Length: 163
Image (cartoon, rainbow, N blue to C red; front, side, top):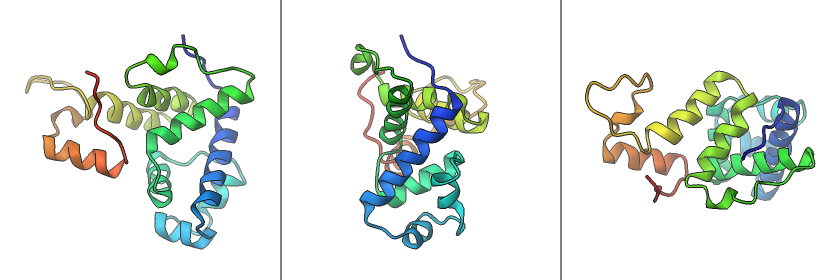
């Protein structure tokens, strides 16, 4: 049902997406770096050298550009597919939580820590409500409603309507 994305396509798509977002933001290179709280050479590494940013750096850049984290990851995923001559699956728009799923798929070729973070955001903090004896290592499933609201705010998400 879903297409895999290779690591090279993913890196190139991430670089292209970040470059486009930086241009659209109207921010200079220095303003972007300052607003995102990154080191001076960080943005250049991500855009020019095709280095994949950590999830933390990616989230900071999305915040600097004032864009939704998961919608941006969806854009990266779609760009990867286009580079491989593939289209987004026809039933993709009907998938509950498709943006979150795209995040996990897009990060499949990224470091495990980034994928773990995406998995935690998608499946634990925003849905899991298991008992106190829960064995989830992330601990996100026990966020209070106020904590969940804060996470939605930080990551520029809309509350999920699906369960």
